[in-house]
Image (tube, rainbow, N blue to C red):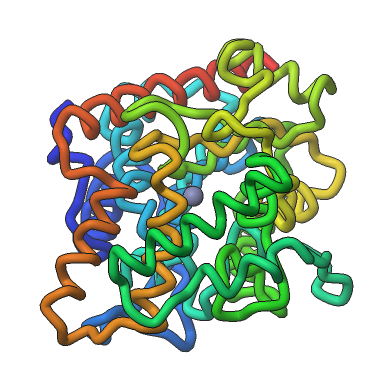
Length: 361
Ligand SMILES: [Zn+2]
């Protein structure tokens, strides 16, 4: 399989390829139009669902791309890799695969990690009446967004963060920055003040395409954590529980157990999409993982700040803008063929493992 048959350069061409290949490989398609927002050229934005297999299948695998918008360039390719391979042709009788393309289409089309409201969709699935506090983030927030993107400002912010890590530990720094916060709408990993459109539409997708299943498997494709071009698994089933062991059985103990993103303790992530789907499913058991492909390691923390800066501080007409946006894109989805070949190969294998595991569950 050639990487250029899986990877696209933007949301529109990724969507076109997804619809064409889904139609050619026997999937049934459903489209969910964003009611209020458009892409950068004024084009309509959709979440598209390709359903493979019998409607009455008792086991269903849901696979998502673009929870973090621009990571969808890789997630979409991961989906297309399975769709164009042997997967659809060899689907076990009682298993269905539900491919959800671009769950955050605004972020994908605008090449931002967040939704149209600067919300990290993967922190949005909480009870917004009781949003958890993140006091450590409050201390760090002034360092996160500065007026001009200069080396001097970047180094100064980094120094202040290093000081925080010196005092409280680097695990505490990572947790404060990454767990999610609900107080600063122009901040990092902002979880929002209400359910995003993508959150509401995901509930509709679960109702329309997953209900009736007795067992559900889950893959949410991301990028930015792990070794370059290699998968990094974040399983959010209860550690040590039966579902956690199930995931380890599919993908291997070494990939599931004791994972430390960027070599640090796993942040106490709030409002994960994984938990949202679990809640929408009620009592139906679900097992699976967020699966990342590694890019620039710990340096990605700076790129999250660049994403914010481009949104709130940059002049889109300036020469620096296009340069920095290209760097942002390359940091989340490297243009490098070696990286792209590796990720589509892994994606095919990992998806096939989930299908086989689900069939045998
Ligand atoms: Zn992500």
